[in-house]
Image (cartoon, rainbow, N blue to C red; front, side, top):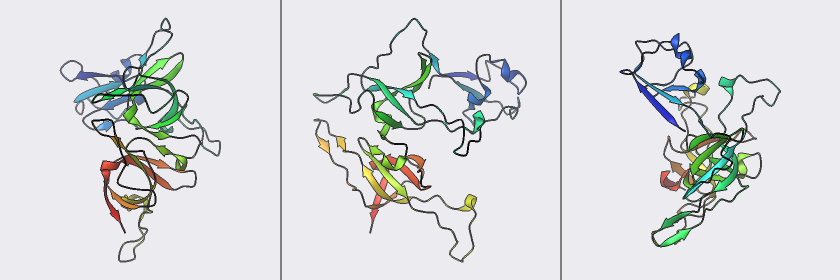
Length: 256
């Protein structure tokens, strides 16, 4: 997303005058030194470095956005404003979408002497990495301009378990966390350690070498794998199961 930076040497801010940054919602203000703060939580003493993130607005006089190279323009799926039970969610509780429809693609990329077209097509429903791309407001809707490599996979249904990974991505069903300690003590949700073991559900076609030849991944569906603890993107399936997508390079071992 487009980012503007203001440092302590150029601006003084407090919880009261932060709202004077007209046109920006407080929910979009992040502080790079210590993450996201809620309105009212900031003091002048704790202020170090302010990073303001906002969508780039394309003026109405422009009628199209043409991605270049291996970039893709995705129309972002609208945020769910209600729970399944019909409860209206406040803006702060609405989860950031990670999916949308491809509305335009670039001409592709070149690897060595090989020219490759984009592996995603206009109209495809895709899932992308959580913090990827630059948000663009265009034709009255929010879009994301991102590299094709930031697209995790294709999803033609409303259930993440049906994800089809792209490129070198691996889609894993996460093993359930241990409910008890070795001594038999019941663990609370907060104290359960995040699992880093799971079963491979699907894999992408592989990576391309410098000559444009496809190299299949070294893991296959059905493998039980150990992966880097803080890698990838987490998802919750409609059945309540936890899933994760990550790059094949983040898979450390196959267990048997």
